[in-house]
Amino acid sequence: MRLGIDPKVDYAFKRLFGDPSHSQVLLHLLNAIFENQFQIADVQILSPFLEKDFDDDKLSILDLRVCDTIGRQYNLEMQTRIPLGLPGRLAYYVSSMYSGQLVEGDPYSRLCPAISICLLNKWLLPDTASFHTRFRLSSLEEGIELTDDLEIHLIEFPKVELVPTAVRESTTLEKWVYFFASSPESVGKIRFG
Image (cartoon, rainbow, N blue to C red; front, side, top):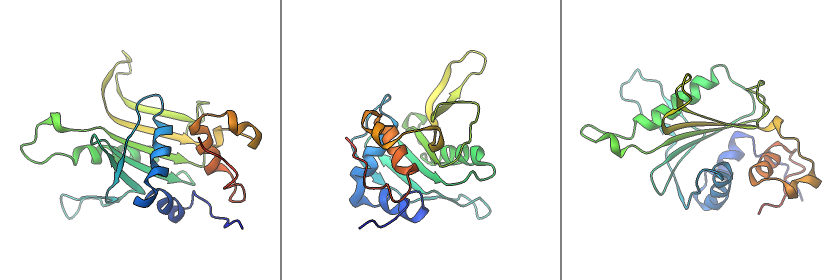
């Protein structure tokens, strides 16, 4: 019996990836995203609330916020539509996670990377064919990075055209995109690993 649950729906996404008893599923997704950069051994699910310093500060509630064993923080956002100001919102989230790590007297050397991952069911960057785009702080003129501590990943589902027969030869991240982008009737037919 198929349940017909869409993993892109906010509640289903948070239950599937935000439940500590499903940490291996979350790890599999994260390791697929960072396959060519690094691999993650374990994660801890954190409060999705970004703390306010003052009463009139903006309260931000992330879809999913996790920390790995070496202190990197991740924000995972699922977007079924493109809200106004999404790039600014993602930059705000990643910079808030980064700046919220230190208290008075802490050295800057204690900062760990903050990474925002936005899974998009719509096109955001029509000028690129890549379905996975990564942004960091770098010089526009020289093309050199200032730091790799702040990173934003955009994964646009519509840019991946997979048919069920081609999934077997796809990358792990492409399989995840297929999982998310497929209709609820297709969920459960895809094998990972």
